[in-house]
Image (tube, rainbow, N blue to C red; front, side, top):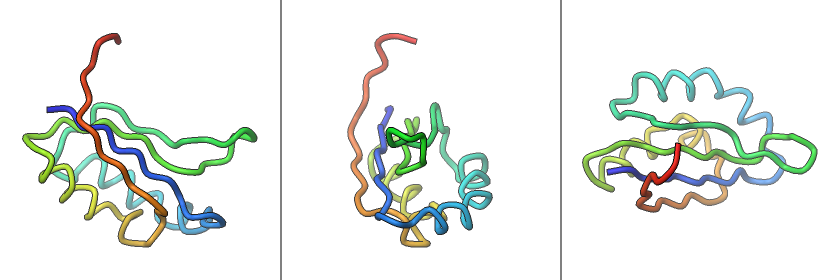
Length: 91
């Protein structure tokens, strides 16, 4: 199943994002799930303000466990995290 994860950063947390970026990118590669798509959300000026990922997982529990182990989440970067089942139609 595909799960869309939408995480919004806490205001003023760019330094947390930058300090944990390498560990986060490593988690995308070796965290135990297939990451179909991933990238930062941007504000109108192009600054990173969150993350959008599409995970290919067996169930939502696997997606939640993966998200909880993300170094960004462990560092307290996110103000909110949403997860929704997602159906690929185009692309």
